[in-house]
Amino acid sequence: MRFLETKIPAPFVAIAIATGMWFLPQAEPALGVLGRVRVVATAVTSQLSGVIALAAFGALWWAKTTINPIRPERASTLVTRGIYRFTRNPMYLSLLLLLTSYAIHLWSWLALAGPVAFVAYISRFQIVPEERALRSKFGSEFVEYKRQVRRWI
View 1 (tube, rainbow, N blue to C red):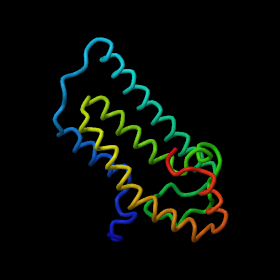
View 2: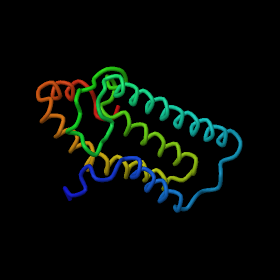
View 3: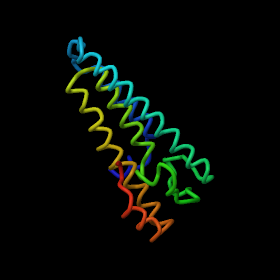
View 4: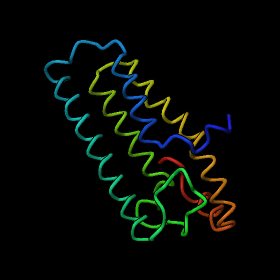
């Protein structure tokens, strides 16, 4: 399965999963207090997703390194500042939160399989190969960073 490693950009994976989530059976929309909780939870998770994505792009731009996840070996700098002090993969975390927000919006327990599938796929086919490339390029500096900062949160 190595042929899938770093081949499909994470946003495309998220779109494919979100499309699949849309086809799942959906419950009746929540009403009353539960409906308001649903709306607020959807808004909060989607907005948090946007903030994290902007912080990640900003940190990479500031460091003048690549944002291309298909070619992790092109990274010119190991970014460990900003949002990268809290998570090694803020862009993937952002997409995970967006899928979680969509699952809440759909109001279906089955839809929660979407974010789980995203984590499984991205961890195996994107993050592990990226970490291999970063370890090869940055050596002990990356190993120390990996020891100090969690993969997701």
